[in-house]
Length: 281
Image (cartoon, rainbow, N blue to C red; front, top):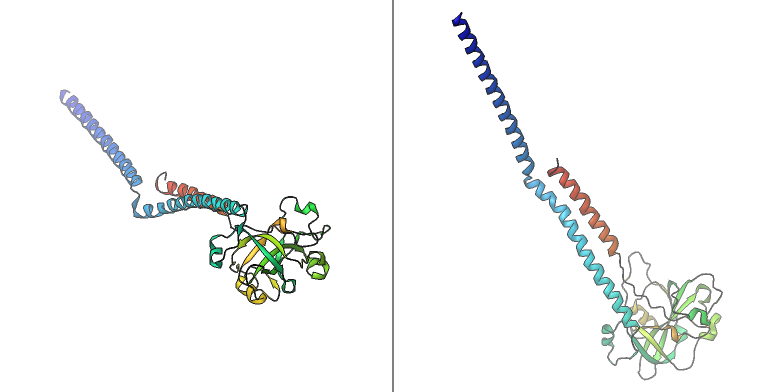
């Protein structure tokens, strides 16, 4: 009887020890698995670091576009400030014109209307109240799309001719006979904005005859026997029955804001994807 009790107690202790050992082993294995999983999560690896470069790079590009936009806005403001400056005298050295683009200069001379060129099509730029002062050559024009008239201008105090963009006319006034009142024959003094040659924009047709799609001063000067110099007449130089001046365009593309949105959006999207793949998986 005593012996049976000892055997039962021994067996109970043995089973308890085995249960404790199994429990400890199970806990140890579970902890090891979890620790391994956590270690695996914390280990990103070379592939993860390479992919991290995508959101970082796109964020950097977005920041660069922010700086570019600020620079472009300052440049546009500077060009507008130039065009509103006090008129200068026309320089003796034509190479100086490259340094004063968008500055106004004062000239005196005669127009040669027999060699007019048409630059366009162009939409009308209204400067101040000039349109309401009767200086438009067609008050009843239904469309504000037409051409700018480029006319050779013989300088009175210099032995050469330049080109002057006299301003805008509608389609139905391309024939000089329809605007004889604006074909000035006398000597005039005018103020014009200095413009330089324009590169041919993509997909723009080549210039042909007296119809021009962009400012190719080299070809314009060859066609009119003038120097490769172009002035945009200011709106105050307009006359009744003639082209409407003040058609200077500050043609600088400013699409940086859309670029900023694009790059920052890509950075946010790829950043979230990276976190889900390598951190919160």
